[in-house]
Amino acid sequence: MFRTLIGATIAASAAGKVQWEASNNVAVGRRLGIEMTSSTANVTDPDCIVGGFDSENPTRIYVGGPCKDLNIEAKDGTITKVTPAATFRWIEMQTLHMEITGPDHAEPAPFAPTTVANGAAWDSGFYIATDHGGYAMVECGSAFHLNVPKEAGVGTAGLFASTTSYLARENFEFNQNEFCVDAVRRTDDGRYFKFKDDGSGATCKTKFLQCVAPCCADPGASECSCSNTCPTQQLQASPGMYKYSIMAASYNNHVNPLNVKDVFKGGAGGNGWEKLTEHFGKSPGIGKPKQLTGFMDVYQVLDFTNMNIDVLEVVAPDGTSKLWKDMVDCDLTYDYLKKNGYDCLAKEVGVKSMKVSTDGEWSAHYAFPTTQNVGVWSHTKNEEFTLTPSATRTVQISAVKPSGGTLAEWNWAKDVLEAARKKALLIRYRFDIAGIAAIGQGDNSEGRYMNYDPTVTGPSGANAPTPAPAGGAAGGAGSDGGSNSTGATGGAAAGAAELEGATEASGAMTYSLAAVALTLAAKMF
Image (spheres, rainbow, N blue to C red):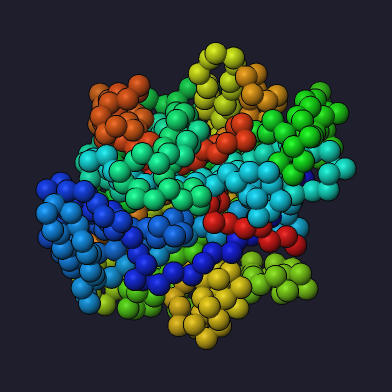
């Protein structure tokens, strides 16, 4: 069983810190530190969605409406002020934890974000905020290393996780997403007024093209094969969809981030993923090689305090539903878990969709696909990265109502009193990552990846990408808002994966929740 915990300390941010990316109205001109975007220039459209992020903590995402209630002031073609009216409502989302564990909630394996603060020789986190006309997105990503004693000899095993928010303004079709795998920091981008060491001011250098269309509708308890080919059936996105992608990839670092003199060595006797497989893997059958098994659990908080009402309805895969106000608090604080273990199974609610209501005219609808894709990436000298889809697996999604102590400890609230005023739900995405591994490093290497794509929409609730009509363009997200190598128009580029000690990350046609990003810090059990 291969297991791991990543905790996080997130700086709580007030609504006044929301950064808006002004690009819904091209005539407004250059942005001025204020980052806001809407899904359509028709602000009276009831399904128009406004997206925003906190530039000090870009993993915190804001989705709100109605668009007509967000006032924009401009001078000489430059936005000077963005002010939500009293009737504007919004929800906040942020990924707080990522951990690799077993099905019994046992102590996770000790992966930690690759940052200087965690003892690493470099900082790996970054974010990229871009606008492409047909879509806008914010990409966040970070690498992780095994935070184990130097004598353990597995210090080069790495994991990359990313989150990317993406807001559609045009119709487009897709079956693949582009994920950034090499981010370069830069200071010559006019969107950034000051280069910061926190990872902002980056641009994507290299991208992965990954299949996100399911290879079957229902993979059941195991998986269905993709036969190494992405389905030609297209998914269709439309204006007003706020999508998010989760992407994670395994790889070997060229050196141990905690000890740069510890250079990568391959094989079962080395210091990377192959050694982990040899020591912790099990054979799935007679004559079959060992493999690691387990789950990647991603925890995301959904805060709907600013919807001004406590009506959040969770619909389970079996069609039953439950209201947030009727759920029982779950204690996930460090001390409680250490003493009692995880005892919230009876308090969990299965999730397939959600509706968050408000006291006004705007509401948010969530659609959670029940499938994830897994695959293999490979790289040889002087060749492009090759991404091969392997299988579609079932995703287990559940939600709990976090206790006030949990929200305070995770810094979602400054204390328990403030937490008591919060209306928050904690969503756990459980991804089956059986077979996770990496072989080699650099020019001759390969590893595994997984991705996932939920969606948020406005009042109409048309919140799930649907199969496109026959004869549609081949999928894929174009990073320039036009056609890319797969022929899709108006898609989104995004990223995820650190393969050389630099960092990469992102989504692609999605508002990425999962995996961890820039500001996460480790909390070990």
